[in-house]
Image 1 (cartoon, rainbow, N blue to C red):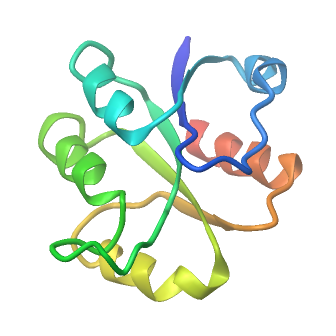
Image 2 (image 1 turned 180 degrees about the vertical axis):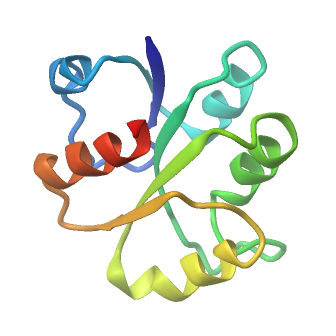
Length: 124
């Protein structure tokens, strides 16, 4: 079974495990980026869905995703990452994509059909 890690950092993301299970995904929901990074020590998901959160207070990084993407780059480069973000943070995503692989990006407001379509593409 394909493993999906769904990281809910700030919220506002629909998580419907039964819909994901219909695609053959085993879902783990993690409530923060810190917990997700810890969980990656023992689990290697095939797909990760996560939010891009930008904070101008980040002095040494673009967003909350750098630690996650750097870890995946070194330990699990085959993991596909689907990012959820506000349209106004697209420039931050572009900067991230210069250094890291991002499989897909979906913009708020999210709907389940788009999330499922992206997950189906990731499974192909």
